[in-house]
Length: 312
Ligand code: AMP
Image (cartoon, rainbow, N blue to C red; front, side, top):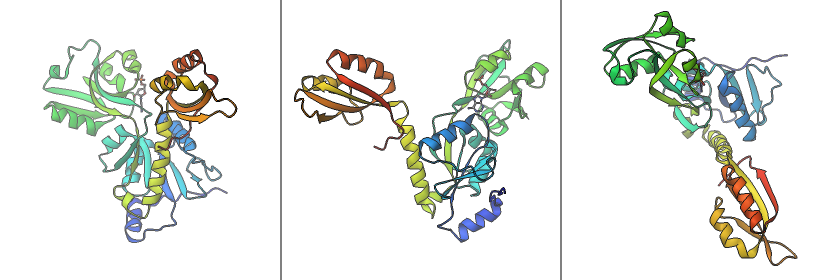
């Protein structure tokens, strides 16, 4: 038997939230149902200890923490709307989509993935090299009409903005638009389509957003715990836990090149007065050099381990 998710209408959700805050109600989190943010978002949840139970209808929603968390799978574009209206308490989507929606939302965490930029691009052969070269009137195709209009307005350029829902890169070559604004991450799609970047309108990455004002209400504690769990995973990114037995005499030298989060923890090694065990959190980037240096100064039993979460 399949269940349908409890997706109330925005109006119903608004009146329920305002009139009858329900302490037993699950924390509802909207996440993208597909696309580049979806997988990384679920991976982040798993690392934070939020294991999803898909025994319902996987495509629509999943539960975690014995039903105390309900994850709703929605289109990334619709998430600002659902969160702003209180249908979901929290949501994960791109900052570009949030900004384009114009909906007031509390951005709680920059999740650090899905990085991209909304850029103004022109055909390779265009004489436009900088924003100052833009003519007084321009036709621009984009799937971000609100952000694009506002950007041209601020620069006093009269722009006819043509909304498109995909394949924006092709429009200048079809004579539909002089310029485009589009998302880019590596820049290769623009180059492949004979386009050149002129300026950046917006920098984006995935964000955790909340219904405005919810943090102070009955959901405050659940939201705080969830945010705390995600932050601890983000803090552990790029970090490793390093253990080694080292000669007591080289401790000062080690402290200088392995500062760790609060300096290495030093523990006596039973049965060997001359050696101590160090435990330290280090940046992944320096592990190669750190291990080589530790070996040179007489370290033994070096272990490097991953860290799932870091709570300072
Ligand atoms: P690029 O890496 O610049 O070649 O981008 C490849 C395609 O993915 C382009 O069509 C972009 O519009 C799109 N894109 C890149 N990064 C993102 C992102 N973070 N979110 C949504 N779309 C993106």
